[in-house]
Length: 236
Image 1 (cartoon, rainbow, N blue to C red):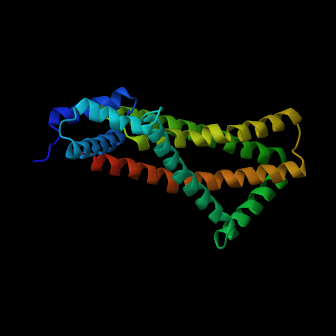
Image 2 (cartoon, rainbow, N blue to C red; image 1 turned 90 degrees about the horizontal axis):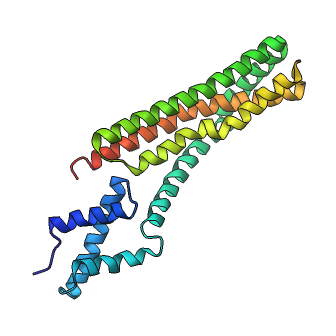
Image 3 (cartoon, helix red, strand yellow; image 1 turned 180 degrees about the vertical axis):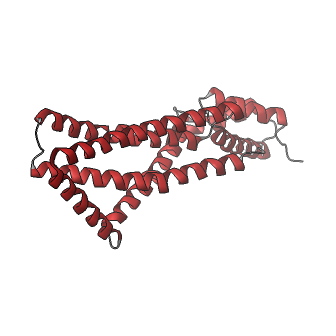
């Protein structure tokens, strides 16, 4: 009769992953399943091996960084997935047929700024500042909501930690562009040059496209992934 892990030993494996800095429950389950199978495989060859010895033998295979390397690799894979999704959807706006929409949007914004002078520039810059604040508030709201859910469930998921950083991208990644444009405008105290209008228009068009992709594609995908993870581990 093959030797199997007891429920108490399964709980020990969960405690072991937590002690080695694996905080996300979905990763804990995956590691516990891997460790349990590996330990039982060792018992098939030698049933006399102690549980603790079999566990340490398997843990050593993860190298000097233990489970940390595995967690970081999984985070990196998820980041790449959503970065590629974001880039792919943004690039679609410079390919036919969406390129026509992008060009039309560029021309409308350019001539609006050029023909309305300072008023158009102020409206455009106001839009950029408001969109920046909107991204920031929406990101904070999302983080607080996820933290509340984690506290309620007593569990956290790896996809949530990735979502936190993805939601910080619009405010952290684009903040330099926002404030450089604002500083340039107020430093000049006059109408922006023609080249400046082109640059401002490009930035506004990119911002509109980025917002559309982020809220219509990336955010729904992240929310769905979180729901799927919660459902998958609901009874585990």
